[in-house]
Picture (cartoon, rainbow, N blue to C red):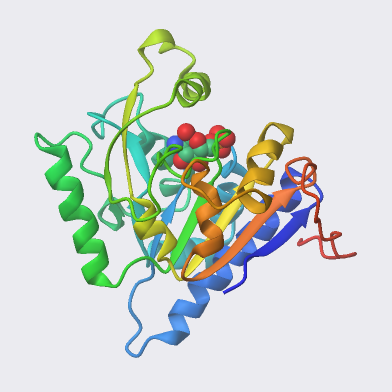
Length: 264
Ligand code: GLP
């Protein structure tokens, strides 16, 4: 299926467009299945999706659809438990789960603090695959082209696993936890590209000039594990990239934003 690029005016417009694409994917699930089953999705942490989450939580229909879905954690720091201050589970709880009223039981936390994390991760991903895989993967883009914590060099069929974070990722992550300073983790766990690229719909978000080089490499450079996001061009399902003008500024081939398409 060809990848679709939506260029938004700015961060707010990107968030609004992403919100309607997420709603559409969840609504499609509701009418598709007979009997209807809960949608399965994964969503990112980081700065990029915060505007999307605000919109979803403030929209009663979207929040209700999310409460009926199963949310699988995308990535986490190795060893992080639910009560840890520096954890993506906590970030997501504050940014989306709590504001949208999503019950804890609907959030499937990566077993980052398991005694045997690698085994537990394989089990986590196998259970997700056995349930039918992801209906929707909302993803952010790392400055180095990573997806989740699938760093450059990750094979496109990589499984869920423990990863050593690249120095640039550690640096970017340090800014999320200003008080943690040097203690920001150097290892993470992540759903594998295999699972992400098999999702029925992928929505990749990119905002800001600091993402422009990574987005250009992902969409217009060689398809290579050196740029994990470039693998989206070979993904099985529907892939929609929603980028604001700043993030799209280094693309050679940019569709003009359609007039009047700003989503209220
Ligand atoms: C982080 C997270 C990713 C996130 C990405 C972009 O390291 N592991 O899940 O999507 O990098 O983050 P941001 O949106 O803050 O730029």
